[in-house]
Image (cartoon, rainbow, N blue to C red; front, top):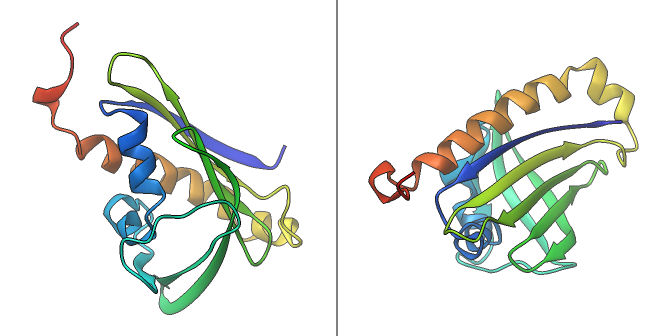
Length: 149
């Protein structure tokens, strides 16, 4: 299986988290990799299935990346594919108490150069970034707002 993922329970409704994920302009707020700089194009644009969007990135040197939304289920699933074919996927499970189980996945099973990603150790680096992203997402919702129990 050519995927790495992490899961965390976030103290926010699925719709709130999904709105954040479906707006590329908000991605720098939660990015744990330190590479996402800004969305290209219209700020506040909400993504849907088949939409294309670009991001300003920096990993050593600045670059731009183009993505296509390839999986979409309102408030539950969104995934985008980079031009190399690998995907970033977010699954949201509403826990019914105002909290959401959030799973972020880096999936390189669809990449045309998956073995190169493995040689360059992208899966391990991305897993570390996924964990940091989920931590940043969690910190966006104050501890005092968490349900008792």
